[in-house]
Length: 131
Image (spheres, one colour):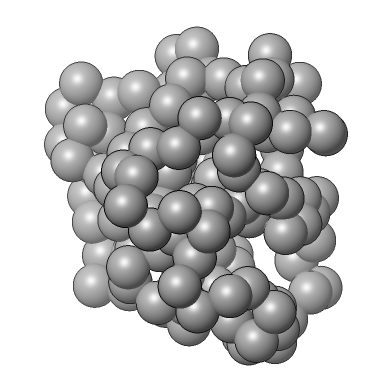
């Protein structure tokens, strides 16, 4: 397991999908204390990504700024993410609003200096953070 990012309990790591939100629309990046955790979920390929996206959209306030912390095996500086080959996160991300900020959580050695091949179904990240 990678070192955690110190936001929330449990903290964000490379092994979890973290879904956080802030009710403060005016702030681009709220302080960690202002973020509320909706859920932090372990990777589970049996979970339906579309059903999860639907439940999140119903439960999080419409005016919230949402941050999705997404694990992967490799990322590049252009937001391309490589996962484990099942497409679960790409299906999930395709079903949530594009305005929700997508943050790739990377560990040491996971950042590619060269562009990775991006498929038409790949959902890019907006930010990368090192765990």
